[in-house]
Amino acid sequence: MTALTNLPPTAELQRLDAAHHLHPFTHGAGLRDKGVRVITSADGVWLTDSEGNRILDAMAGLWCVNIGYGRQELVEAAAAQMAELPFYNTFFQTSHVPAIKLAERLAQLAPDHLNHVFFASSGSEANDTNIRLVRTYWEMKGQPQKKAIISRWNAYHGSSVGSGSLGGMKGMHAQGGMPIPDIHHIDQPDWWSEGGDMTPEDFGRARAKLLEDKILEIGADNVAAFIAEPVQGAGGVIVPPETYWPEVQKIVDKYGILLIADEVICGFGRTGNWFGSETVGIRPDIMTVAKGMSSGYQPIGGSIVSDEIADVIGGGEFNHGYTYSGHPVACAVALENLRLLDEEGIVDRVRDHTAPYLKQKFESLTDHPMVGEAKIVGMMGSIALTPHKESRAAFKADAGTVGLICRERCFANNLVMRHVGDRMIVSPSLTISDDEIDTLIERARTSLDEAMAEVE
Ligand code: PLP
Image 1 (spheres, helix red, strand yellow):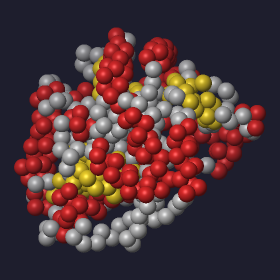
Image 2: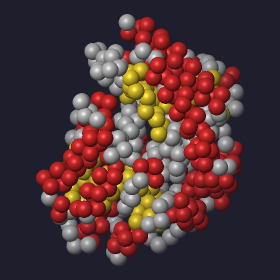
Image 3: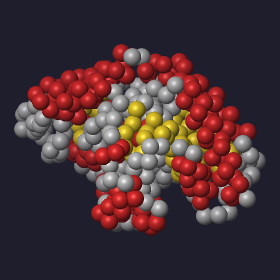
Image 4: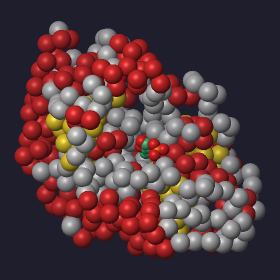
């Protein structure tokens, strides 16, 4: 535990932060006017800030601390690996034990045909790898014109120029000349906001059909891959209608297009199975992984690829890699994290108990006057805020204003929930207890009441 007495006072930390620290996805005015909340320690699902507040983290950090905070085993795995071999690379025909063991373990956990791992340090890097992997694969197969990658508006695949281009966040594209060439986007399967009068089932089929239309527009001979999150996370936990994924799988099979499942959030138990691909019933050629692989204790990501792709790529040299591809400390920590998730039955318990309990409690929020729908898969869920449930109307204020108010109320009530537009999200650690789920829901309800009073 950090001794709070050793810290400079919060106001001084906030002043220094505003003076020198540029933050990701944060409006500068907020930093200057209100200052940051400084988190000093964490345990289980609880954060402590520099004022001594205990805050329930319903977002597992950034959807990543699957095992919960404060696991000493992971600290020891990191320390032991640092003492033994703090760094060596995996370039030029070298390797080391943690990378070898982690690659083997990931191959065991992943669907049968995915047995090869290319390591990165983040989800963004892994998706950049995927752009190069799929294009190199087709080039090596004698089809260099197959370059186009199709993705979806409102998808999130990372923040580098490549992965940000794959993503469909228009606000990101507007800054810095994205998307890069040969990336295309189709509309997302968000029935609540975009489904109009259609049934969810018809809408799911219609949105899948957009993939076929786009393939035909570009020409199947020019399309390398389709990338998607099994359940969109940062887009607002958009749970696709059940008709969506089976149709998408048929379409990629029909046209010989590689399927990349971005499992950065969905992987490692988040949806109630080891991978979201199992939950939605798809057979990807590549899975992007990160976050829950190490429960965020070390930065690590990767691309788990099929035997077919590995065979082709292995026929030559893939001119790609990061200094920290397969970093030994990150690999050792990830291995230990996967061991605990497995041996303590954490993923099994999510499926059999925690996710059903969270679903029941979370869905009860729909009786709140401001909550339209509550959608949840495993341990990731969102509620849609609306002034009128029947018509699924949006608030007249700028999109996201009510969500932001609600997030601020949660924060004031010592609960971290995230807002995306006017959706409020939870994605807690998989180890959250029933009592903690009850506290989460109580605090969410109080915050919704307060936000409603502020909006009216
Ligand atoms: N892919 C998905 C689905 C994500 O949610 C994220 C991050 O939230 C990323 C990729 C990017 O991962 P990172 O932030 O580790 O680069």
